[in-house]
Structures are given as structure tokens and as C-alpha cells.
Length: 208
Image 1 (cartoon, helix red, strand yellow):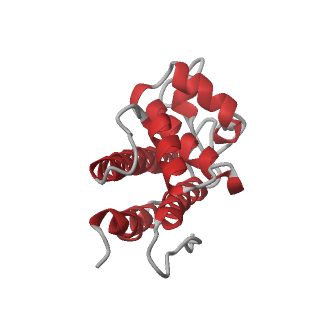
Image 2: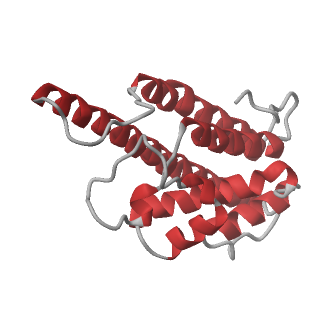
């Protein structure tokens, strides 16, 4: 019989898949999106209200996407912690010094023999966590770091997003998370656990 420790990566992968397939993807698919927001003086009240609705639709969709990154990062970090404890309990490695997300990620990857540099896996997993920090805290070191790590998550020239406040925009408020970013993050998290899975028929190339 397989040990509980050996079954955990497959359980974690399945739980992430269910979260994405049953919650994240359906919600994002149901949210309206407008590729171009009209600006300027409206000719009538109905046009003004339609424009306001479109702006709110796009803003809400982006907020939902950011909240889902926060959820994915939190779930994945807890999974890493649980797996590390199972390694510790089995006496296979001393993981008591792995404090914080990035040391935990690196330590677990080393134990599982996962090359985080391969295909940008580590970059996506780190980026996901930094995005989550920016969603939580707004401006600060994480926002500055994310702008260096992933400048493509900002597009100040886009015509499909309007800030809630006029004037100089806060960088953290213009962070844009699109469906393709959510797909990158769910692929990275499920791929990590597939690579850590020691059981037969492990899914190392998830269909995202």
C-alpha cells in the first residue's frame, strides 16, 4: 500500500483541478468583458449609464481574477506546508528551517527532485505568490518587485480598463490579471504536484 506521504501530491493536484474547473473557470467565463471602453462626453443619460456599466464590468472581472490568484497562492502554499510536514514526520528530511513561501517552494522542489528552472515553472509559481502579495497589500516592495518580474501584467495604454480614482494611478490598482495568467498559474501548481507524484501514471503535463 502506498504511504500517505506518497499520495499527497496526487490529492493536492486533484484538489487544485477541482477548484479551477468547478469555481474559477466557470466564474470567469460568466463575467462580461468589453474590449474597448468608450470615453468622452456622453450624448444622453442611457449612453452614460451603459458606459459606466461596461467600466464596472471590466473592473469587477479584474478584481475577481486577482482574488482567484490570491486563493490559488494560499491553497498552494498550504499544500507545500502539509507536504513538508509529511516529509518531516517520515524522517526523510529536516524541513524545520523552511520558513516562508519561497524557501518552502525551493526546499520541497529539491526534495522532490524538481527543476524549477525548467520551462519557467519556478518563475510562474513565484510570480503567482508576488501577485497575491500585491493583491493583499497594494503599493510597496512586492508591487515594485512584481513590476520588475512581470511588466506584462501592466498596460497603461489599454482601453479596456478605468481606474476608480482620477489623477496619478497607483501601480497596484492597475495590475491586470487575465484568464491566460490564471491558466499559467493553475498549470504551474498542478504541474508541480504532478512532478512530485511518485505513483504510477502521474500527470506531469496538465491540460491547461
